[in-house]
Length: 275
Image (cartoon, rainbow, N blue to C red; front, top):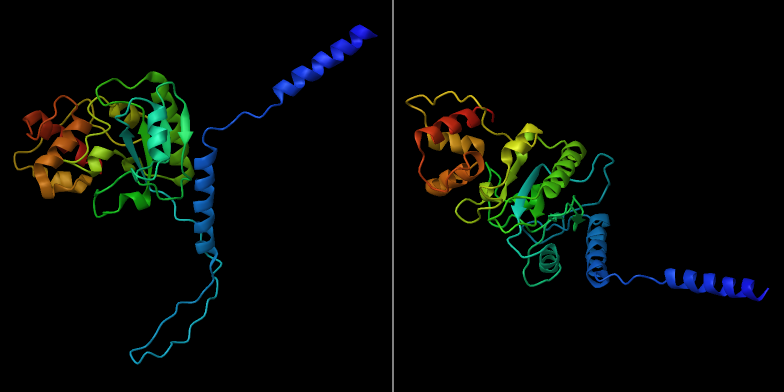
């Protein structure tokens, strides 16, 4: 009987120890996230009519009548970055501090761990001053993915595996076009280089995430207009050397310069025909 009581006490002690709550180090920032999301939800649910005045200062009759035909605005681009920081922990800390004013939807570690930091339908602050085609506010239409990488090292296999799985989900969930998987350097030429010349864009293109040049490249015609081709792909050509450098980091990946060799022109001719 005594042994049985001791066994019961030991079991109870173990269960009590195991049931202790694990402290979440991000409780505070998660609480701030929830509060801000709640504030946004109140704005979305507001049913106030537009308050308008005519030229004489008299109110114009107005009312709110809710339509039944609407949904959330969905992301249409995916922008890939590298963190240029020492660790995932450092990046998470950066994105949970107010002062840096930067964020992303996802962070992927070298070990393949995926951290979702912002609802996909919300606007992260990852693109900064950027332009792609006619779009000058990429934050409002894109999902930002940060890869734990300093920019001067290969991307880890586990990290790439998780990225490809995530991209497949995003492409399916939001019907994102193949052409709309691009890098930070593409939309901010001259300002940002990431994800850099080491990033395996060809591997992504083989899976349907972005375009890449074919193995057999048709030579560019003699009168080929490279500046127009870059612009049609989406590059901001107001600073043409910067646009050339961004294109080469993504599609040539052999050197980082603002000069187009004949090979570069042939690659550009091949790529732009896909857009």
